[in-house]
Amino acid sequence: MSTVGRTDGTGTAVPRFAVVGNPENRRVTLFAEAVRASGLPAPRVLPWADVLCAGAEFASGEIVRIDSPGENAEVERLLRGVVDPTRVEGTARWYARFTEAVREVAHAASAGGATLLDDPAEMAVLFDKRRCHGVLRASGVPIPESPTSGPAGPVVGGWTDTRELLRDAGLRRAFLKPAHGSSASGVLALETDGRSRFRATTSAELCPDGSLFNSLRVRRYTDERQIAAIVDALAPDGLHIERWIPKAAQTGRAADLRVVVVDGRATHAVVRTSRSPMTNLHLGGARGDLGAARASVEASGARWADALAVCEAAAACFPRTLCVGVDLLPMVGWRRFVVGEVNAFGDLLPRLTGLPGSGAEGLDTYGAQVAAVLSNNGKIGTHRARL
Image 1 (tube, rainbow, N blue to C red):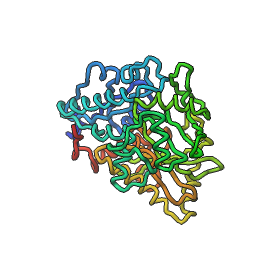
Image 2 (cartoon, rainbow, N blue to C red; image 1 turned 45 degrees about the vertical axis):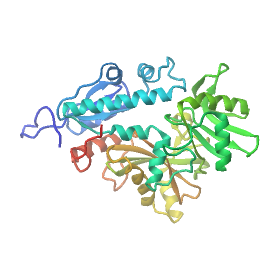
Image 3 (cartoon, one colour; image 1 turned 120 degrees about the vertical axis):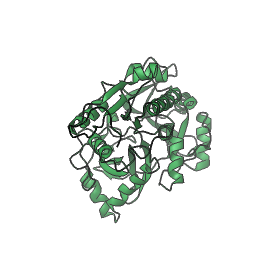
Image 4 (cartoon, rainbow, N blue to C red; image 1 turned 135 degrees about the vertical axis):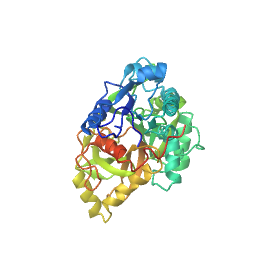
């Protein structure tokens, strides 16, 4: 185990964490609480704004966590080049600058003799939905059918290309997603009669000047000219198309699951339900009943353990990343599952404790990660991130 700093009085060195994140963000504060609860000193926090402008330095033996750069207007400006953080456009620039910054952090960690918990090459895949789906498919992980999966998929230049790809793939219901987006920003749930009628459900608000803004209200567009304008505005940043999977329901609402996998093991899960195609909690989604979901799975003749195994198989595609959040989509009937996305920063589930038998009982997602580091049974100290 890599250690840094002082000893615990018995001569054993005490592990010391460093976090690259936004200090005011609850992700950072919750992780710091978990570190202190384990009896360790509070982690050293390197603000993203400083790292993006001046780089980072690490001490020998530090254990380095890379956290989300989101929810900070100045960091958004540095990454996306937009003054208003509610703008949807700019994700391609965000991706290029963010992945470059992660690689620079990795080089700094290596130069300082620190251990990185998040692999920069894997993170670059996780933040490209096309590449991520290609990796999952190649590993046999069930995913929605997609004409754009993998690095060799077609480039979606705009609405004309989208129409052609939907027609050629026989998709009358599909999700159109910014390749480097998150939190459902810019996502469109598209429906068509296969001829001339289209409907798009999205949280993106189209302004008269053609610009796009994130909204907390999910809205529907039925005018093809408006839908085309939205898609054409998103296309320069890269687009991913996948089949719209008919989800299972709970209390009359579409349901999916966010499953957190730590060091290869599914440790936490939450059901998300919604009356719209997007289950994100900030868009009107609500937490569902996990016990009822498990009962539905087992009543279908499937096994709950098999559902979790799908998530663990998805996480196994990224073996040098300590923790991922898997969006697991239960199909109608709760018997079959596909993986919608794998999220590098999918662990923000406050106050949720570990699944029975997961080894994380009584721990939140951050406590589970700290425990995995301290157990030294996985990647820490045995696998260094690739630069």
